[in-house]
Image (tube, rainbow, N blue to C red):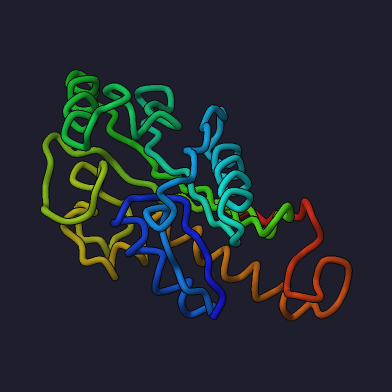
Length: 219
């Protein structure tokens, strides 16, 4: 089984990613396994650019294939905010509660509660870009948090899919959330990309299951 570093210390993200990555033959570890590695700079203006920056940084720093995600919430009434600043919406040291509170404050007088979660995933091995994919989940923002599960903005976000039954991400089981979430969609796109490359057979950059450098796939 190949070891792969997931570029996060967020236990929730690792828990969501581990089952599908394990099915692909990867032994997953997080950045907690590399305490001496410096933190990647996330100064991109899109989720995809930040994911690639992180994946390249940690692939070089750890010597392992690195999977990085950059994800967040884009709220229509706020012009797409908090966007790439989702994790630090209420400040650099803000926690989930502070970010959620600020979001509710900003939306207090807004009738339009439409929003989407976006997840960009990037897999890099050495200096080779294996895949870059994106998943989205459309939904709306509640007036108050609901549910005890998940993390981040999950207690405030209700996916529009009928199967969610009007429940927030924080009210859904991990399995149910994975079927609906932006991260689940991105990971399924990654799986499809890697399987397609494997089936493509030998070729430049493919003799070990890798695509040509610079190849991207988006979903």
